[in-house]
View 1 (cartoon, one colour):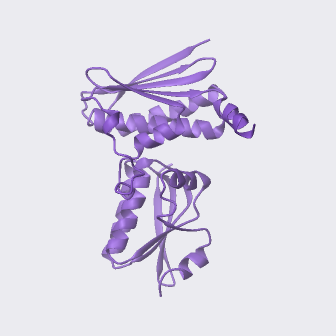
View 2 (cartoon, each protein chain N blue to C red):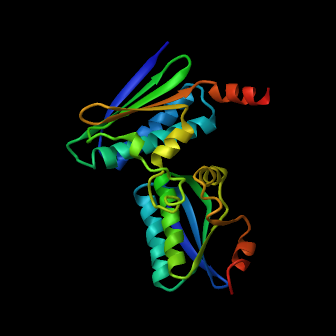
View 3 (cartoon, chains in turn red, blue):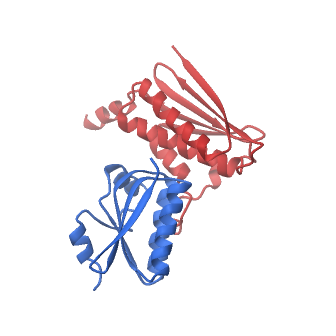
Length: 147
Length: 115
């Protein structure tokens, strides 16, 4: 069975907080562990911050859209802004020595660290980022590692 | 929970007790202003006690890095105290764990500052 809920949000930090807390709530309802809930919520927060700051540039006329979809085997969260688009290939590596001490640039890195799959799509105008966390993936990986 | 920062002096070291969330917006600004004020007052031995910090996002991590750099550029030292597991893990995956001087005992942390 699939459950889907979506929100249209203003380009504000309050909306970022809303997207984050909703993510935690949906992840908890989907049965993810507390650690996974925390990580999923942080990934959503980082994606929402990117949508508000870098995508929509805090333009009050622009919205961003968050959809949470729970299936039998995954939580799929889609965040879409109305900005100029993003090329994920040109995002600097925050772990590179020349970037390590920079005061920003770690958001997408953390999203990738915390989710199982991350996809970007330009949607004219804007960027859509899809975050996927599989139910039980962590356990499966742990099992493989011990074999 | 909003971020709070209060300072106290221990043997020439300024301990900043922080609590709440260091995230984009208010939390990051409070940290930035607290460190900026201390540096402006010539207090260059700073110990950030993060024991009651429940959450840090990428903006908060960036703010910690900026604080570290700004204190060091003024000839001072900034150390971190009492990381929660979540904050510890974040600094590990961002490869910043070895950049910061991280302590888990306040007395030893204070003794580790140059006299």
